[in-house]
Amino acid sequence: MLNPIFYINGKWEKKSEAQISANDAGFLLGDGLFETIRFQNKKLFLLDKHLARLNSGLKTIKINIEYSNSDLYTILNEIINKNNFENGLIRLIITRGELEGEPWKYNGPTCLYISIRPIAEKSDIPVKVVYFNESDYPIIRFTPAIKSMNYIGNMLAKKDADKYGAYEPVFINNDGFITECAIRNIFYIKNNSLITPSEDLGILPGVTRDTIMKIGADLGLEIIKTKIPQNEIQSMDEAFISSSGIGLLPCFWDGWNSEFKLTKQLQKSLFNYINENCK
Image (cartoon, rainbow, N blue to C red; front, side, top):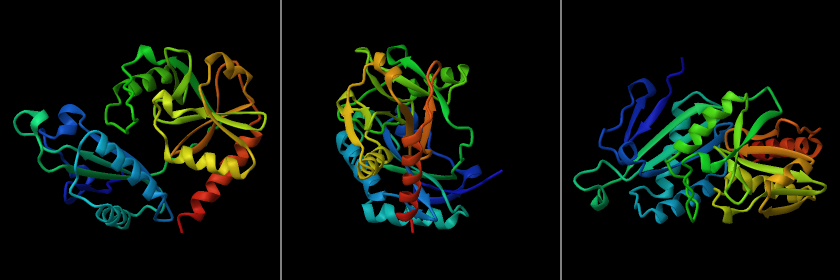
């Protein structure tokens, strides 16, 4: 069993020995943010974009951290060097700190937790998705969107997706528009257009999502961020999901499938882009 070394609030500890305080704001209240960052060939992928999103979210929830971007860069590279993974994922968590007294008045030092794991490659593709009404789950949407630690609705939907043999649930909002997956973004292709839900629906603008749109534009696809009605998905030519962990995976749902011609081109281009930017 893997026992990687984590960064736990200023200390390096093995996973089996890592602990957090029972007074930590993230544990008590879900008061914090996280980022999942990919590394390839021991090099971090698009770290600047992850840190920009992290800092924007921290500003939104009014958390001031004691770490500069340079400090985080050093720690993130050190955790890669301390562990024997060429490729993997790093999860960086910042919480408001170890609470004392009334939580809403607390303004003490923040806590920083960083874990690491290898990437688990998905060989059974395309993957199945299932569509759920997000009103059936306690989904929290923020404006502006932040990568909050409050994922209970998303995890409940993931459990229900398992019952249908699905890899990922895709949410539909109260207005009948597609939003995002439980932990990933979704794209559709129709004719020569790459279509994905727009940010004004409250979805999180993923780092990998942005990269795929750039690659799609370079391949000559028209990029459309819009409101996608549920009743239009059957007319789509292709579909795929994306995240830092999986990169890009073609997907299908009951009653619909595809040959994924353009999806496979995008998948190959994304793989090459990650490798070229992690040297």
